[in-house]
Image (cartoon, rainbow, N blue to C red; front, side, top):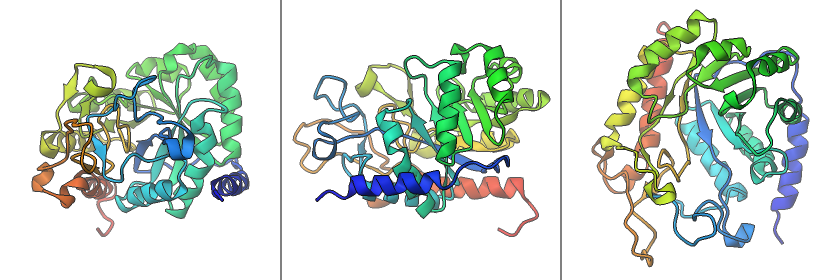
Length: 333
């Protein structure tokens, strides 16, 4: 008997018990973007997100150490949350594509697993079909019932600033952040802060200017750092940001900390399509029957073999502690 539906029902019940109060949420030092959208034939009836739509072509230049997993597998999600917590990250920002989407149905599991690992959960409200200010208002009510108080909005410009402002002014006890470098628009829309997400076009050299502009308009600033970008196998995108054995990640972290942000966001824990993930990776599946070539973390930070598979998670722990020291220099390490 499969016990996951019973577990999911329990997770939903526990989540609803943590209904939002009127108090504003605390600001985590470090948050990470998380994707609960992967599926396997055994658990979900088909390969979902591991292959290109309507094909059998593998959709990443990297291969997970834990293999091709299902995001509906409670054991996998709990292990992922524990990895995130062990790296010192305080919050996962779970990708969310509207009511009834696979990401919505799995959100109670993400919340349950995160709580077991003592990690907070925010929602990444994606540009799902038909998104409008009215649907987002309903989204916020629904997600608050699950105990979520922090919301990151991807591509907010598809809704007018005045509509965002009216919505934001009508809701208490939450924080709403815009993925944008148009700081004036974010302020006019009454967002609480801004983040960048994009680590290709919005790199280390832009953070100081970004945060200064945000702070000038009384907005919180959350620059996004990441290890690199390579989506050639998934989307054919020819833009690549090489990892340079960890030097790219280090440079972005240093610049983010130097920009005096209110928090740092990481792109990403497991966006395998775009190759921004820090989840452990290996050089390919056993046997590699498809004979595909894979990128790996081999050599990152001078590490090799199994140690290299966790290189970016372990390095994240270093940078999380460095950021904490910069924020609270008088506290003991």
